[in-house]
Image (cartoon, rainbow, N blue to C red; front, side, top):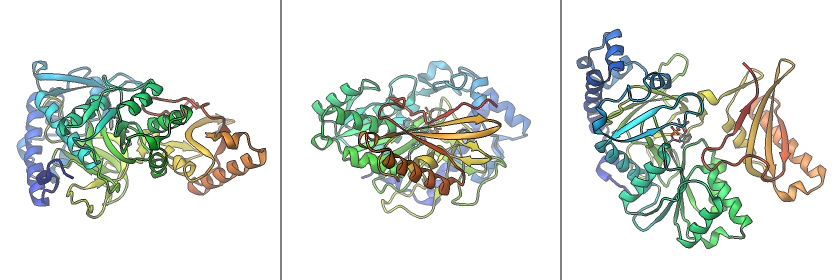
Length: 432
Ligand code: DLL
């Protein structure tokens, strides 16, 4: 099913033409209305009229999160506030919040792009969608909300939190689709079990998950535990929020809404494009945004463009699920480790719960990483020998995946902190 069949199956030549037109418009717009870009272009001697091909994108300057902070709150807006009808912001847990704005047209574009993603993920007018993302400055709740309304689904804007009530509502209102972070869906599954509710008796069919990295193993676990088909969708508030890319039911990568965003994959150090199909930093330029256009925004997310066509018939290129963020990369004993590599191993081993946390410490000038993973009740009450066997198995697999030794500790169920939004996977206690 397609939301906009003509656009989602656009021919490459038409797409390129459209992208160039829109890029030129965007560059013109920011040069005229955003002093930050006006100055950058002047410094680099870029005349917007000289952007005559998509390759010229590479001449344009990058934008980084600090630029948003330096221009807090409204300095990068390309329209007067009078034309802004919505403001969102990132949480700002690691520094000052970053603020983004939308015109009425931007909101319409945003809903439409989510309508594409929601339709591709199997959800439509007959569905009852429970949105368990936070509503507020975070873009997840409102972003999905308006997209779901646009496809005609019945939306339950329950927002995040109060897990038992979420389940009660899911049961009573016969929700057919769940929208939240992947980690929260597993917390819901655990809580259902505690409440004695069998997911098979619910009406749930689809899960639309995003906002944080998750592995294929985690998808399998979610599908099995909730009896649904889980798809991934990607976005970030600086660029729009959700709506940038999403999976179709083939579940083999996320289709990028390429008529609205240019996505580059660059080497995070040299900032040159990586060879086709290789992993690098995702850099995004918006093509249609009015209030908050972004030129070459460095997301710090790592992904790659998947080769080949998707059997679903969409012509938009697909990105692989986000593998992690450059700033989430841990350097343990000199080796680069992404939390996702650890998650992948944990999901391959039976006997543990899908809740884990990685603690990194420095002891006697040497790094020590410990993975805390919750054991199932059965395993926890089991003999030490069985527990040790599982720990050894995980350690061994981590060592072959990463090439370093990582400590593994089983902890009792419900010991690790639960998050109703994005899970906190890493606690780095090292002082740099
Ligand atoms: O998380 C937007 C969003 C909400 C996307 C709901 C999808 C669903 P921020 O709070 O600004 O915005 O966080 C953006 O979250 O740079 C990634 O590191 C991470 N992220 C978002 N979606 C995914 C995903 C929203 N599907 C940051 N897989 C991004 C992996 C994701 N990481």
